[in-house]
Image (tube, rainbow, N blue to C red; front, side):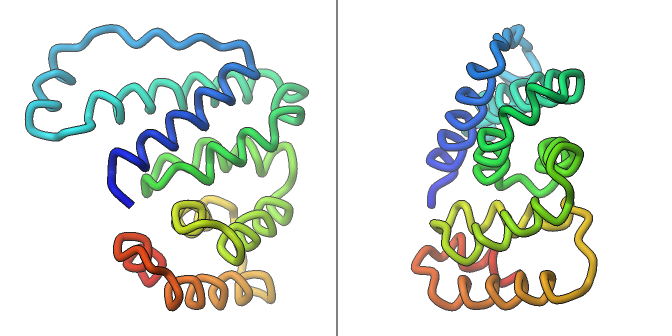
Length: 162
């Protein structure tokens, strides 16, 4: 899966979440971002996504009932975020409103039955789900290995095999 497709999927999931929350995000122009974008295609969108993620996180942290109602959309946004570090923000919200066990089960299910992007994002989010060793962690590792073994996408296969 190409970087642009991944960024588009991530931004679309965040846009759906923000719309449900009634949050509008304005990203001010920044010369540094423009300069970085000259060397890194997609950086403007990546930067905008970061602002959107933080706006969603702030709203969800401040309004627990909204976080409960938006759980499926928060999970969808988490499962579209392939960045190594940023999933922690949305994972924290999901752990707070649904519990770590529920989130871990959702991540295992995404690896077992999701498309390659969801599988990779679930694998990346696992570390932020406060996972402990045990049967569910073993099931996750098994599902991840199996997903890597059958994955047709070289990018996703490499990420799942890590």
